[in-house]
Length: 124
Image 1 (spheres, rainbow, N blue to C red):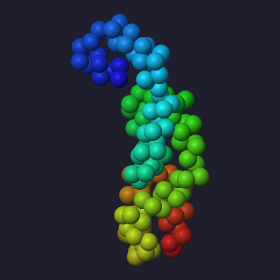
Image 2: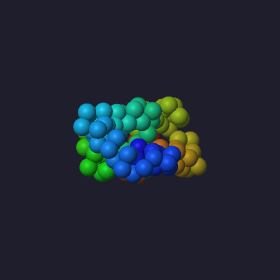
Image 3: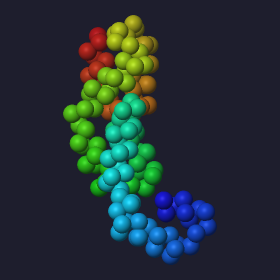
Image 4: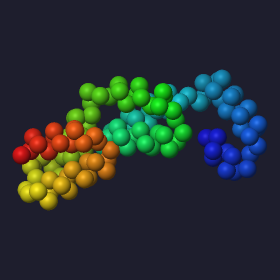
């Protein structure tokens, strides 16, 4: 938020004061933003690596991001399977090219290579 306001020409002191007031009133909370963002992006089929990168781009700290991602550790395999099946269906890959295509897609969605490998190996 600070970067956006600075880009629009607001003075640094004005931005700092406004952000301090928002934090004091509970209207601006990194942990809550991370929680909502992780949940929303995971439901849309994105994995933890991509979500972490997006939140870092938004300026959130790892201290705010990590607990939210770790809270979903048990859910990532199921979310990976859903993303795979939504795109490719439940049928196994037909050949090595199809296997590679599926792996690249899931990797671009931000899922860890080890989870992708486990999922695609089940289809062998």
